[in-house]
Image (cartoon, rainbow, N blue to C red):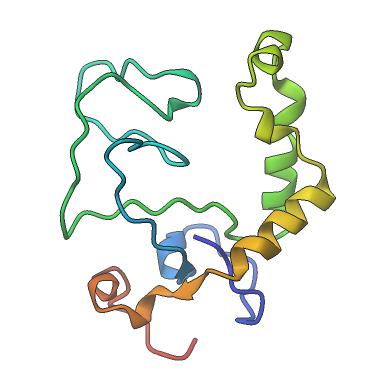
Length: 144
């Protein structure tokens, strides 16, 4: 999920699911040779056997079909609290992680985060306009 800067989103209200407050995102189609790139592993195993960052596991990859959805709130909500949360991760990386290039994308500055956000906003779309996604937003009416 990536907030559209022209939409006029306000800060989210605690206690209301984000999926009821945010509608803009980027659709990534499954890529079985690299199933977890940029995402997270969804599993029902006793142990996930994750690699660093929970981006990969030796478990078999399955494409979940409709009506299964995974929404990653990547640059949404794009507000002070989210920026602060993203910036607090980098300083916690170990020397080992940095030396092995694990999680180094978290070493971003505020300026770099803003540039990344602007880059992703060029691809974000109102998911309520896509028929397959309308099941996620039954309470919303356009425009909002």
